[in-house]
Each structure stands twice: as C-alpha cells, then as structure tokens.
Image (cartoon, rainbow, N blue to C red; front, side):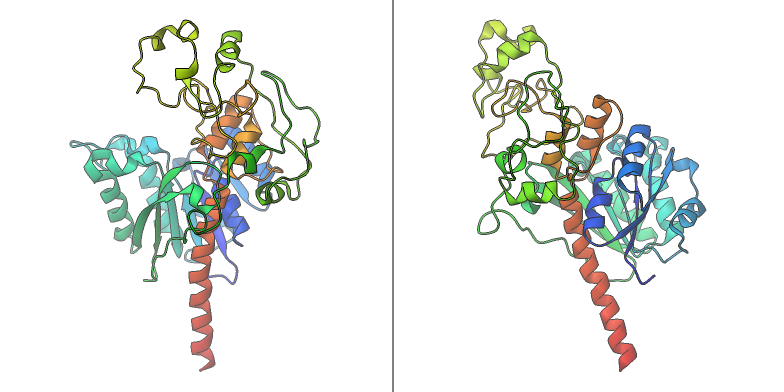
Length: 379
C-alpha cells in the first residue's frame, strides 16, 4: 500500500460516506455515480477527489486507477453501496445470475481489478430478508471468491451520534486475513447521550410553510456540541427552504402536537383514503417531531404523507438543511440541483458520522498493521 490512507467511493451520491472517511483521515481520491445532480454536489464538496460520471458499467478499472494515480493493490479502501434495486430480484427463483443484479457484479469487477486492502459496502435492511438470505449469501460468496474475508452487521446510526433512527446493513472485508471489527457504540445508555432533534436543528432559522431563508445568519449561537461541529467552517445557512404545502395540509398540521400523527387530525380533514384507516395503520404519517426525541429515518422525500417530517413547532415540513443536519452533513456541504434532487441526495446518503466511525475502525487496523511491519524491520 501507499504511505497514505486512500479511498475510492462507488455509487457515491452526494458523498456522505466519502465525507465520513475524509473526517477519519482518508484521502478520498475518486468517486462515481450516474446521478448528475449528485455528481455536481460531489464535485463541489470533494475537490480533492476526481468525480467519474456516468453508469459504472461504462468505466474501466484503468479509469479509476488513472483518476486515483494508483496501481492495483495500492488502494486502502474501496467503499460504496450498490443501489438496493440491485437486490430486488432475490427470491426463491432468482439469484446473482439474474441480469438485473448487475450493479453488484460491477462492484465485484472493480474489487477484482483494484485489489483494495479493505472493502466497505452499505445497504438497506431489506437486504437481509430478500430471498430468505440469498442476497447476503451471494454478497459474501462474491467477496470470498476474490480472496476477501467478509463480515456484516446491522448498525444503528443513532448509536454513533447521528440524530436519527436509521438502520443499515454494513459489510466490511479485507484480503490480508486481518480481524474484522465494527466500530464500538459511542451513544446510548451509560455512554454519550443520544443526539436529539433539539441538539440537531434548534439553531436554524424558523420558517413558515413555503418560506425560504435567503441570508446566511443562524437563529442563535450553537445550542449543543453537535451544532458547533456542524457549523465549523461554514459560510452560514444553506439549502434552508420549506416546501410549500397545500392549505389543507396547514389546517391538518395545526391539530398535531409534538409526537403526534394523523390520529390527531379531525376526521373531516383527513385525506379520503385515510378516513377508514385502522388506528394501527400508517403509524408515522403526518407525524410531528419532538424536540427531545430522534428524527425519523430521512428518506429521499421528506413528505408528511410518508412519515414524521413535520417541524416540532412550525406548521411545515422539513427543509433540505434540516434533513442534512439529521444525516450529520456539515453545514458547508451545499447540495446542487432542484430541491427534489437535493432531498434525494440527502436521503440516499450514508450519514458522515457513521462513515467516520467505520473509517476510524479500519484506520486503527491499517496503522496497527503498519506499526507491526516497522517493528519487524527494526528487529
């Protein structure tokens, strides 16, 4: 390997995992995604990395080696998460032979050619149950066929300081026979307290439904250590505009207290399709966040019809910046494209704080291995 810690991020999106690895001390040399708006964000926020645009199947191993200025075997970490659609074909009849699972095959193609020391792969929880475990077996067998020891674990983002309930399956592997360790939990009972909605967004300017914040000023000084960290090096408040919701939604939201949901809306104001819903259905639809709780999982569309995406006090849905705070993106991270595209970028991302925890754990192993080599040489 080279003397520095290096990384390439496949299916990088806006670059949440890249940002986490950078915070852990890795030099992210290249990223790839087919999404143009996400690519524009990545290029703006990762100026030290070369962004390779377009479908991954159109790129060669040599393209990545040339962009990173490395030779095969010199890369420290190859990271990424093939979109979950690549696994939707798993069931009793289908497997990795199905042509629609090509994205993971492309990932393996690049693992084979780049020969990174370590690999990180992240995906949605549904991966575990798809095809009664067929997807997980195919992934582990694919890595093992290339000489990698591989392990996976479900990680809870909130246990690493992210102010959001988020579960993801993370695979870690290496080709040197090194032990595979997942990062230790840092937040929770008898540890650091969980990062709350108040900790995350209480310093951001209050907005009305449909209102955009057009200057860079915050509403207050940082009210938590989390806010201090998110604001470090920032030019101010960016991407902070509330989507304009219909008047009937404003009327509905007025009835919903913090922690409440569609059940608090008078039946005559409910959408027609929900008037006959059972009380146990749609548990988070029209949900209002609580200041001292966690955010719901940030999706690609913070739509109040989908879940708990109503501001704790204001009768409006979340802004891109608030969603980004819940994902642990620093405030200087400016998202490109339309607002719809920005929400997609934020929702698809690996929370940078989770990425940092993964990077720091792998970094410990790499540096420990290097120290042992130096001791052997000295002896």
